[in-house]
Amino acid sequence: MGVHPPKQERFDLATNTNIDPKGVARPVEEYRLEPFGLYLARPTPGRPQFHYLESWLLPELGLRITDFWFNPGHERDQDLYLDVVSIDVNGDVWRTTDLYLDLVLRTSRDVRVIDSDELLAATAEGLVSRQEARLALDTAFATVDALAAHHYDLAAWLATTNTHLTWRR
Image (cartoon, rainbow, N blue to C red; front, top):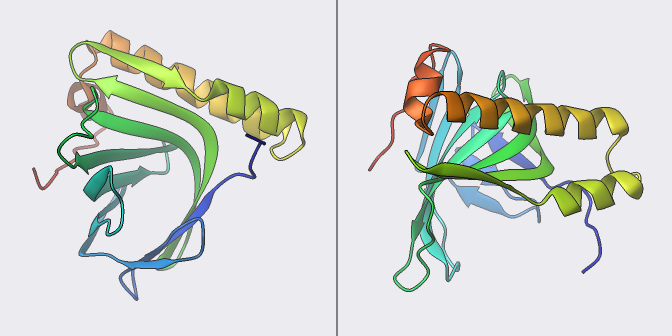
């Protein structure tokens, strides 16, 4: 599989939509704006793996944290999925650019960094700059360190940054 350009998404609070990387506008059931970030919850029609997602966009941490509601038979051994992203906010529109690296968190057990091969390939192809690649690596390393220092408890770590996430489930 060839390397793909960074995936970009748009989150439009005024229209209650999430425009996915393919340009498809998805209705959002709930947006919630907090001083530390943006929460969204929406169904994911047509996805065989999961039927719903909840995400927090945290600009200061360079993360999108997602809880996927998996369909039976597609469950994964994970509690949360953390995308390393850059986030741009312009009024009611939030934009994310995925920086390839992802972290799979199993609460109170461990965290695993994945997709470093994609980041390296994208950097080699000039799809992300060396500065963006460095930011992605620094963000991933800092996140792993913080989670490990808090026994892989995301809420415990984020509480130290005055970030308190709430979820539907």
